[in-house]
Length: 334
Image (cartoon, rainbow, N blue to C red; front, side, top):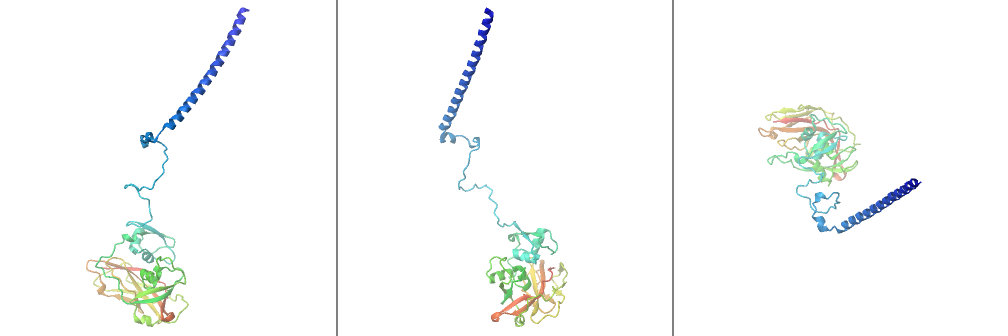
């Protein structure tokens, strides 16, 4: 009996002892937590700019940065800007009625530059084709001794823009230049022309008989097919001791106010500038006085088309194409 009572009392004392220990431990943990939280808050309040300034930047992670308008360092990489540098290029998607020559005129480069940049050996391009156009600053300029473009008397004609026309194709068909057309019409952007717009087309050294042959207007239709060039052969190399004879097949008997217009485009610095050639014949001879200097090579591209001269309003004259332009032929004179 005495032993039984002693065991129950001993068990009751152990249960109270464990419960007290748990309560004490919980209280201590709460006190420690409060103490640590209060210490962190006090530390944060005591941080001053002087202390922070003494900490190396690389040891402060996730520090927000507010940019200020200070100039970039000298070695900083500038942001890419769409400007044209000496080695820059642009991309151009070929549109209807465009040729390598018209594109070259639009971008103030040579046909050879476009060929080289795109790995093209001929003159065939397709609508929708993307061409790389080298920067015009990279084109080799003619030497100072190269002859200037022939000036002479300037005649001005009216031209009504047709669907699909560009300044370059108009210049190529009528025998003017892109710069002259832009200047005569105060146009800053060659793309800003529209169908039925009337343009002033300046032409240099137009023979008097061309002006006197003007006739009445037509419906503006193309009357002939493109002239077929027969000589020189494509890429022909001609000795500088020989004149160059340009020849093509007759499209038909021309009307009195219709003329073949031959255009020559210099492709190298040694090549000379020529005015447009107006003729009723099916050939044109380039005399030896235009031959390149000894040791130089002059490359030309050329084409021919039929142009109609019309009476305009108030005594003015106007032009309209009577045929598409021929293919573009090239020859080298050296």
